Image (tube, rainbow, N blue to C red; front, side, top):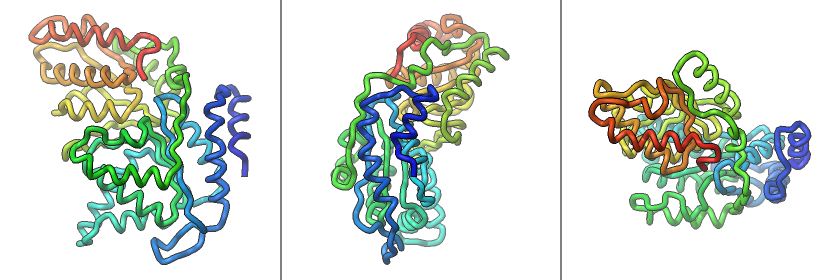
Amino acid sequence: MTPLADLYDRRIAEGALRDDPVQRAVFPEFERLRAALSRPARKSGFFSRRSPEPVKGLYLWGGVGRGKSMLMDLFFESVEAEEKRRVHFHAFMQEVHAGMIAARKQGVDDALEPVGREAARDTRLLCLDEMQITDITDAMIVGRLFEMLIKAGVVIVTTSNRVPDDLYKDGLNRQLFLPFIDFLKEHMVIHELVVERDYRQDRLAGSQVYFSPEDGAARAAMDSLWNDLATAEVAPLVLHVKGRQVELPRFSNGVARATFWELCGRALGAADYLAVADAVRILMLDGIPRLSSDNYNEAKRFVTLVDALYEARVRLIASAADVPERLYSEGAGSFEFERTASRLREMQSEGWGG
């Protein structure tokens, strides 16, 4: 069983990481969990598996690009137990929704119970990356599900950009979610990762992030950046927004990639783009066309998307038919687009975002 510090030092020696005392300060919590997971689990009647004694999980939170996901991945690698799983929070919730739909088709009264039983059956360690709650349905489901898993002896490690008290902040009927926040504080160690450097932005330092015209060279540059940033498993990310599904076809480690038409060619609105901005830290958008009255609806959606990304300080990497100032040069809406062009230009500046 390789200690986490050894894996960390190895990455530093390889030049993949920079030594950071704030990151090292989390190691005792990870080692506590590794020691607990090294002990054999015992069987019981509730979900068929319990740990020998209750084990507090870890809720690791802090600003974007501080190394939370990297530390969780190192911890996951260091745990030898086979009954472990690492998944992005939104992808996990997609599976939960799908499982509940299947359970309802079987006529089950409590559709979440078989989902929780399945999730706990072969899992002792569950690592959930980038926990965020934006939907009242998810808010109510995740509260019950965490209680079920923790009571079944599953050790949960999760990362988040938000302190628990800010989860689902200002959300509809949030008072119904507050008991779960108290549950989190009781059953998980809350650790803030206070790091001045934004390591994800460091990877983009000095890099061009807006490519025009949208040609072979631009596509190659976008692919190169994607390969550098997508450091974890790549999978679609489906967001549930007011009963609708918004899909980002490619997602990895907080970085999403989609085409202009996949995000702006569909009948999406402000709530959808706000959910996108809340779920990702970097958005790569391919193939922004020239805009005019011929694609007015798509242009309006693009303006709304840029506004959502801008307000959330999400980093945008894009390929486009032209520079921002010439994307929408004539027709209805061209005057209003001047602000969007200005924001696109500002979002290209080094150090912007996060």
